[in-house]
Length: 188
Length: 188
Image: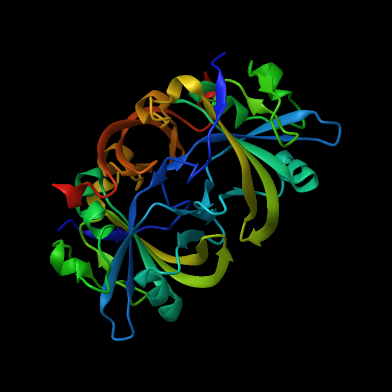
């Protein structure tokens, strides 16, 4: 067995998705933040996602005030725009204009969908909770939009075509090979 | 722009990690559960991770009673054992014995580390919260152990060598190519 050593933890769980979160200010002007800490809290009934945001972020106040956000899942080819959106503040820069991203109206919430992202998840904030150095926003999912070209004939998302982006210890990674599906070892 | 269609959401955020969580019963007998819903809640000070578990799971009661768990990050080569641990209940099967996994004593908590997993994160439960169809366990990280062979000369984890496992819409995937690091577009 390899020797184990202890090292100080920092953001120790991964892979996480690298996604773009949209929000709006009181005038309806949209903003984008790149987040790695985005996850499922309740899977099916109801569908609730969590996002962890630090208080100083501009998107923190926008989402707290409006009570709405959209999770936009980029494909790996968008890594440059994902990084750019994560390197400047919406207080200073209109990220849609600066990084050539297209805002589409959402169905149920004020923050827009990012057209270039193949998946867009509309959320309404159920609650905000302080947990250490970030706050957890719980968002009920009220709609999900998917690029039609990603769906197979059964309406299932084709993961290889989606090509989502991972965030791992400060680095962006693509996905590699499909290794199996949940339960595959039962059916051999 | 591709046409968007609306589809019902289900576990809509990914990639997530596929990890093995260890726990113990009142007699100290260890169990393992495979989870995809494992994430960072507080990044640096303090380091807090979240795991979402459904109430019927055996690990739910073990972790609730003992107040401790360990997050074991497998490498992609362990996908078969990861799936096997996700297909049976610890009420019926000793998963360490059945799937040939090795329990190592942890430093600060009773649940063991899984020796075969290159990263092991010891956690103490800070609180449990009902959120829809799962409960969120918040765990303060009290130690992190890493296979020494994964560290470079600066003590940093080598991600390609770690080769962590993704869980995406019910499928296991390896990681692919490194596409950049956070901030890389600033320095070109």
